Length: 427
Ligand SMILES: [Zn+2]
Ligand SMILES: [Zn+2]
Image: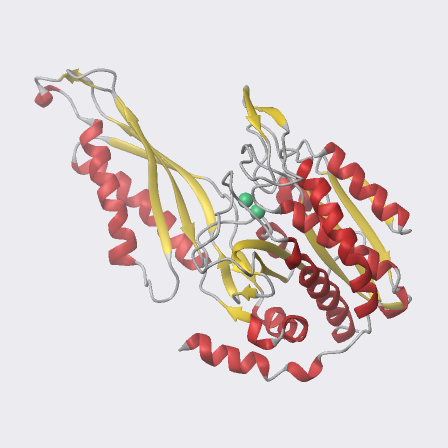
């Protein structure tokens, strides 16, 4: 019900949309965008190792006369394009890294790249579709560079490495880009980003105002007991038994304490370890898991209750528990006002019937680090073959992941217009 009401509300603001007459320039860049995408797909690089990818991006931006900064957050590339009219600064972001996945698709531009990841030889593949994000944003840069007379302000192009996470022991991604000042000099007023979706048909756009993708926090619970012979538990304190009580108790935080009609939340214990053999009760046990939340008050509540519950349960059974919860990746929170005002641009480009409000996704996206600082809007662009059946798609991060090239042109249109419309509105 809420979804239907909000949709009606958003379409009411259609009138503020401004045409920019870029159809010809956008059409002219389409085949190049597909060519770039295929080239990048064939030559994927892992997080924080996007050296050639960054070179290609930088060379393209420079060829357009865009001011370019390289080596931001290791391999990031930032382009600055000033319009002929004064105004605000809007940023457009594309992530550029690939994944340690061996491609199984039969494509003329299939990746046969191999690399080393955590000491293991792995195949490398753009199995999340970041190749399409790069190509789309390169296309947007080309269209806008030809039309600086239509830009009221400045457009900052952010090509960001390591969205999938930097290798252990390294910093990276959006968090590091922000730390290195990507949102300053000049200060960015608003940011847009998109993610291609292998499950959403070409031509469609999906979005959600507010918490769109979840915050992800890693946690570790360490339970300290007292070691004893497995035959005589009364002479020790069994941390494995206590661990099982905590695993059980944690699910009651979700099911009995959270107002789940407000937003969803997840606690998953993904690893449980302790002990060495059958007849020894060990000294300690450990739980490792992930927390997903879509609302900061709920996140605070979950974190606090997880600490209290682990400590109280442990105490009840004469053990001790310590809980460490990482800050993790924030909520991909679409600024409600910015989302509402940006929708008409998307509706105009895709057709209102092709722009859908969806439910929140419990996956995470590091675009959230920009949104922690400034208003941002992140949406999903359809990449599924329009001829495929309803259930016929291959999930992200898998060897069969596939994106249909015909979806890229809408990405170029959407990002170009959304940026120009923002600057027009904010003058
Ligand atoms: Zn991914
Ligand atoms: Zn991704």
